[in-house]
Image 1 (spheres, rainbow, N blue to C red):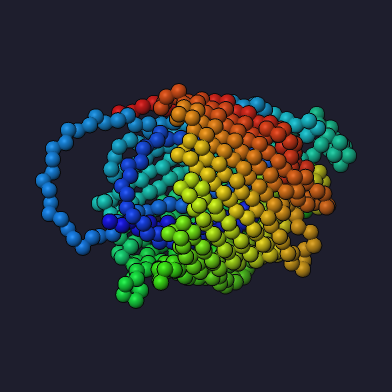
Image 2: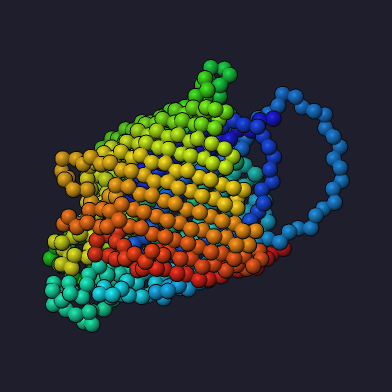
Amino acid sequence: MALTFVLPFALHHSSCYAQDDGTYNESVVVKGSYRPVIEPQEKLYFPATITDTLGRMERDFQYSITPTRLKALYEPSRIKAARIVGEPTTKLYNNYLRLGFGNYWSPLADLYWSSTRDRLKTYGIRLNHLSSWDKLPDYGPNHFGNTGLTIFGKYIVGEVLQLSSDLSYEHDHNLYYGFTDSTLLARMNRTRDSIRTDDYHASYNVATWNIGVKNMELDPNKLGYNANLRLTDLWSQWGLNELNINFNGDVHYGFDVIRKYKGVAYLHLEWDGYGNHFTPKGAMPLGFVPDSAQAARSTRNIVKVNPYADFMFNGLQFHAGFTAGWDAYTTDTATTFRFFPDIVVSKSLLKDNLVVSLGATGGFDANSWNSIRLINPYVAPGSEQRATRHYDIVGHIRWTLSKKIEANAEVSYQMLRDDLTFLLDTANYCLQNVYRPHYFADNRLTMGGTVAFVNDEMLTLRAGGHYYAYTLGPDDSVLYYRPKWDALLSADVNYRNKWFFHLEGQLLGGMTADFGEQIPMRYGVNAEVEYRHNRALSFFLKMDNLAFQRYYYWAHYPSQRGLFLLGLTYTIPHQ
């Protein structure tokens, strides 16, 4: 018997971009022998995280595997079923409570609850909060906080159609603390005691509603489809509002390729519509020059069409298609047609231990107000919006040296237009602590790789890094806030399923900031220890920035030094 896996194949072409989500529709068909495995079901677990005001640069390669059994031509005669004595139902853990507290007055709370055994429906709720209420020497308070609530549900109709929906609300707040006491006195002739945190406070609210429908057909030779609608509303205390309506859907159907070969054709459609309104009001960030305030109202749209096909031919795996779209976002008064290739060719060698892939892809994505403020929380309200375009040529090699060691290497060349970075807004904010978007053209060469060692889930070691070479367009002579290299080394240890250890070292090369200022190399050591007393109760200690570096990612915004978070998790068993 054989087993066919269809998995989305994402090619990482860089690690240091903010606007590109790195998601592609490529897929690779992998064939191998079928071995039935019953996976153990673990309790719900969300590891504790510490969110610094500057954020951490994360990379993640996610994929999913959908097994499909090949039908045999021979069907054996049926055997009369034997009577089996029923086993008692096991305890389910459908809830999760995590509580913690860290230095710098950082409370953490996370509550999760969902329904239990039901073949047709699932529903639940999650509530989370993390904040910090301390201050920095010479900079004063650097408070930040995030609170979120999500309600979700899923229902299967007639075992052929899945309906899903979730409703969420999120509240974020932080301070524009990037000015010292001496800067405040020199530029505004004021002292720290004469101002309030409300004078340089930023607050955002986001409400999101997702609705989805998907058919449950697993046979690729039959029609499959899914459709999703997402409504997102962003508003703040400055009279800023952004309403986003996103609709996307996929249709796929199997076909024959020269008789003995099979393929699957896909069609992906997406529409992103934005309604923006900004009328400056209320308390703007401290140091704002009111004469330069300009009200803004616009309607912006992006439409994408991505037809492609996945098939195998003479041992080669092909993903062939293109992405076409209409960009009415970069300039809300004009529409521009965009076209990008979507081609990936892969070959498996050495009994599938070596996989080589080459591809030419591309796309464009909106830099909305909501996405901009998540990249840089110190950006000015009502910032300029454009859509970033990227054309990518990517090569990737995955080599499985043994059952325990795997190596990945990649080389990519990207041509980016309206690439997003930030510069200090010196015209409208006299304290030089508020940023504005800066869009530029650049070509980027990325070379890097990772090596992973896994020893029966007891020990996992990972090491990797990237080097970046840039060529700027004619309108820019300085590359702002782009490191030329990064490196990562991590280790995970599982001791008898009781003690769990994680140790991670990160390096990020120096960068050029505003006015030619150089931001030094960022180095960090992070660690986490968890003790699981039983399946219901565990304790954790998370430690970030153990090198105690006062690093910068955005100029004038230093980080706290060592961050520590101590807490516990508890679940209530449900029969």
